[in-house]
Amino acid sequence: MHDDEVTYRIRHTTAYAYSDVVTLAHNEARLSPRNGPFQVAHHARLVVDPTPAFVAREHDYFGNAVNLFVLQEPHRRFAVTAHSEVSLRAPFLPDPDDTPPWEEVRDRLARSTEQEVFEAVEHVFEDRAAAIDAVDAHRNQQAGRDQRLQVLFLGTHHQIH
Image (cartoon, rainbow, N blue to C red; front, side, top):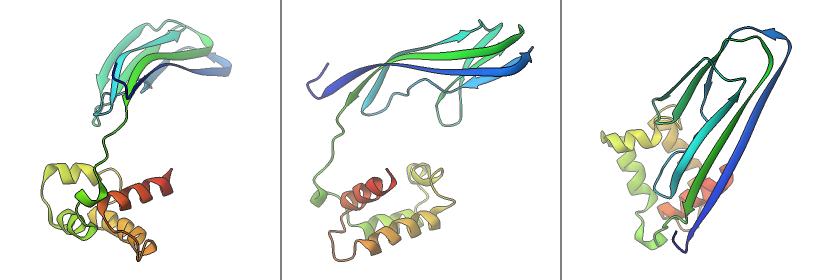
């Protein structure tokens, strides 16, 4: 473990209770943490009660682990508990003066055919024009302030969260 790293052991339970008996239930659970540049999922497992008759694991379009399971015995309740261990590192943030001006990024986004640019916005906004409009709106709110990309990103991030 690095000095700037913290490890979490996570347990999350979702329980369902029904007013009548359920005889068959097909389920999908997306409860496994993902690996990323600042996150490492050391392990993840699901415990389902009652025990499923069928269990499979696949990945969806976005790369999330999808746990599929089928309950075939009559039940009035069931619970899914996810156990995982994840290490997080503080992200590297470049000096704002080393990031490009917003106008340069906006123009690249508007005309780019690069796959990585498309992937950056394909699930956040309806389309590229909407992404540009959203960041332009934030930029207009920040008129007269530093317009470097990182500063704009962090300001928008704090508004969302």
